[in-house]
Image (tube, rainbow, N blue to C red):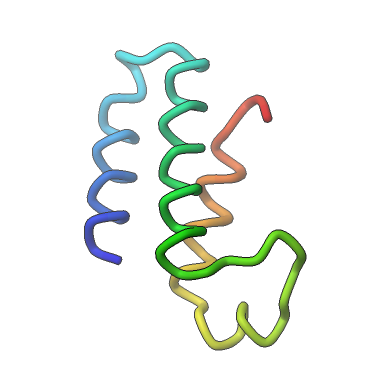
Length: 69
């Protein structure tokens, strides 16, 4: 989880230097990495969310940080 946090923090620091499209790509890449590593399901799973609050907090922050889908 620390590597994901580190990558997210790095993107936030570089956000002024990246286009919105590039940020969206980077955020999406991190989200995909998290989906694979933590087995995040496409459909909302309340049990998973409650058992993994740190994972879901960062995942949702990444999702909300994107301007486009």
